[in-house]
Image (cartoon, rainbow over the protein chains, first blue to last red):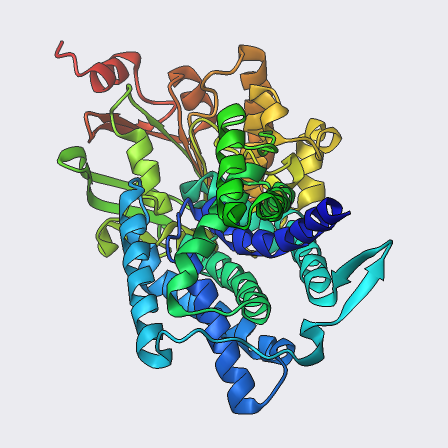
Length: 287
Length: 236
């Protein structure tokens, strides 16, 4: 029963990892940009949520209503102001610039909030649970997983059923020809980053409710996001959810064997899958 | 002579250090079909890329309806009514046939062309509307590329090597559709390797040779000798 419990908790944790990964996957899919600052943006969103809850005295889920549009706007401005200038045939400039951005965000957060670990207060929700067949499942992890499923279904809908998604796919396929169709790729990229950071805002606040955070933890979240994307297969959002679930389950099962093995087990499973399926488990079926 | 729809003034174009066009002068009249011929590397595609905004030029080097457009981006030029059917089709592989067409119409210009209308022009596309664009034959892909450009209801349409890599029977069916396309008062520029074809569908012809205009004239008046001299640069 303990093992089953660990597995289920890991699967639910995977929802959070899938949310870390979804933004990363979206940005890479649309503009081939590897965003090294993604983890720090998640932490930034957590701090924005913290400030909102303290200043306005609202619940973190209410704070989301402010942090999501704020992060989306920040994403659009960041993309049009800085990141668009780095995109081209060479993958290195965006890597370097987002690495720099990562350092800047970390230090700015350190300056404003100090290095003390912080946590968002979600009240009774944090400890509420339901019993299902002898397992005790936390309401918050269940909600996190549910939100991950809904968000990924939503992203999938946007990608394959809307004009915006069509523009994303067209620009991703061929920037020049998309431009001939009247799409300004700089604007489309801005919208993609806005959408990615809106998802990041949700991920950041859920992270901040679940665990304590400080300005230095972005790098670790980036790795989890990367691993979930790679396990699932690039360019496949449902695969990303599966990747997050596998990573989460590996971590909790590893921790069950020995508490020190939590992160190690996740990395080993990631390496193992990379070794046997270099394109991930569910790579995008190319048409 | 009425005001041309498109005027090109002393256009130079570069790829890095390599100069592809040298002082090209050209104009397109309202409603005419203009052919551009020339050997590989003569600068034909470069010229179309410059007109459509995929290459940036000085503002005044390209004027469209007397507005300088040389500096505009491709999306801004598309919104003004110039569409390019690019060499090699270049459909969006992630999009279905229908999505490829719809995205062409997203420019938001009003006019005679709609999804129904292009399906009437190329009925085979309606049958295959929901398949991936990559699963079509070369000829069908070319139809999608043409229909995609038409969906933006352009006033000027540029065709870049539409017969390249297609079987003669397919080329014929595509060229047979051409009068129905340009009959709506649209102007067209056709870049074509097949000189006979180019001359038969156009009213005027320009020949490019190593980035310079080497011949201009009425399509039915230029002689074989003039063309071969302009095309190959052979002194006779």
